[in-house]
Image (cartoon, rainbow, N blue to C red; front, side, top):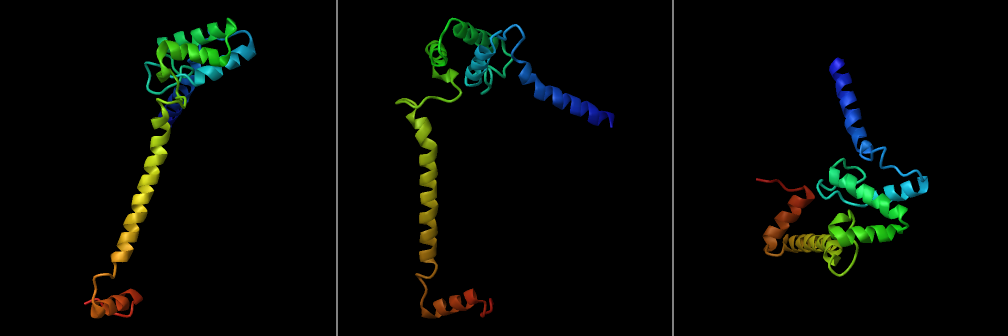
Length: 156
């Protein structure tokens, strides 16, 4: 019973840790600006973590980026200007969801295209299999196959 309690407490703490990534000193006094900062931070990748947003990361670089986002917002930048500033500085990799443009089109098109090609291959293979099921049989073999498929024949 004690082990279960300890496990539940450890689980609750591990789930709550990402919420603690933004320190009290980072929070802006203006709730509107703070919400904008949180929205922007949720879409920015921590450059030293594995696909974690800077809002969820407790890495030092993520903290620096959160502070930078808040500084830019206080300076009067729009949300898009803040994102563009970070892209100019760190590259498009800083965005968790890459933008659709000429050099990222392959990222957006490859998965659906491969899915369609795979589905097409499955359909073609199924058609070939169905058309080959009785194509090379003579009359006697076709009759035996028909009986077996109907369930009337015996498999010897």
